[in-house]
Each structure stands twice: as C-alpha cells, then as structure tokens.
Amino acid sequence: MADRFALTRGQRWKIAGLLAQDRLPVINAKLDDVVPSKTLYSRFGKRAIDIVISGAAIVVTLPINVMLGIGAFIDVGRPVLFRQVRSGRGGRPFTIIKFRSMNNATDARGELLPASQRLTKFGTFIRKTSLDELLNFVSIFKGDMSLIGPRPLPPEYDGRYTKRHRARLAVRPGLECPPRFFDRLWTWQEQFENDVWYVENVSFRTDCLMVANLVRYALSPKSSAARASVSRGVFMGYDLNGVAITLEEVPQEYIDVVAEEDDTVEGNAI
Image (cartoon, rainbow, N blue to C red; front, side, top):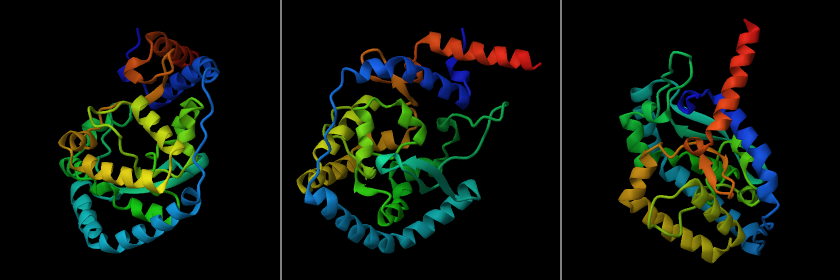
C-alpha cells in the first residue's frame, strides 16, 4: 500500500488526472449550466470601482509594503517576493505577487517540504493579518483581479473542476469572496459553491454585502487562524457524489495505481 503523504507533485497530478477522467463525465452529465450575472454593473461599474479603490490603496499602502519588504528580507532573504501563476477570468493565466511567507526547505528527494513546515513566524503574522495580500492591489489595478471575486487558484486545478465549479472562472478573481455564513471553517466544496453563487448574483448590492462580510471575516478570530494555517489540503477532484475532495480523501486504489506505474517505469530505466 503506497503512502499518499510521500507522493511527489507529479504523482499527485497524475492521480488528479485519473480522477477527472473517471468521474467528471458522469458528474457533469447530472449538472445544469451556470448562467453568470450580466448587468451594467458587472460589465462596467465593477471595473471602474476596482480602478479607483486599488489606485488609492497602492498609494496609501506604499509605506507598509516597504516595511513588509524589509521584514521579508530579514526573515527569508532574497527574493522577498513570491510569484506564482494563477488562473484569471476565462482561465487566462496571470502572475500574482506576494511577500514571501515560507522558506524553501526541501526533503531528501529535493521536493519542497509541506507548506505547514516551511511557514515562518513572520509569514504566519502577515498571513493572519492578510498583509501579504496588499500587493494584489497592483493586480486589481492592472485588471487581472477584482476587489471581490473567487480566490485565484493554480491553473493545475482548472482541469479538475466540474462544469459547475469551472464557472467560478467566468469573472475576475478577487482578493476574497467571503463566505455568506460563518458557522464553521469551510471546505473546498463550500468555497466553490460560494464562488458559483457569487458568479450568478454579481451586482452592486451583492458586492456591498460581500464587503460587509469581508470585514466580519477579517475580524473573526476563527477566520484569522484559518488564514494563518495552510492545512486545508490540496484540491484533487471529486468523490462519486460530486463533492470536492483533498488528497486525504482520495481512494487508496488511485494512490497505488500511480505509485506502481512509477515503480515500473523506474525499474525499466535501471
């Protein structure tokens, strides 16, 4: 029995691909299409507000960003910025920039250690306070992001979504798409469903509601602890009922198939 926690990144991609191949056709056949909201606000007003607010925020937060840059340099050294490609509107890739909150420690195989083991004390602080998000105002001003919208996720996730959850890419990603309900920390499934609800209901009123929820979300001790944590797990695909799952929930047979394939290839190469 292969150890799922010893898998390489490449092996996790293979497993996600198998899950998508086996399950998405069946799940998608049962789902209705999502119809994004199309109003004057969603087409023009939202972008105008993004430009004004992000432009002002860039100027106001400049001294804070300089201090954060110095702190990141002392904490993790160069480079102080973390760059990663994320999926934007329509699945178009763009690069987000944040201050680094993790070191680059690796294991014996050269694979990066789990994020929870690389997060520094300074990194925990800026994640908990969302200060690592301030540079995203640049992405908003450029038009890659919006103030409110689904969180931008890595492009590797795009092929794993059901057609319903892929609709989260119908709008610009945002700094946050806060949960409408605060009874517990949410799962990937709850996040994706919340994102789809937003796509279907974008309006000035909805964004005002989301901003109010964002303030509550930022001030919530439980939510603050969740932002500082990196333990939710990697989104891998769906179970047979169409519920998003993480690596911990992937059936063991998928783990074993990929591990055996790689062992065979490695054995043939020797």
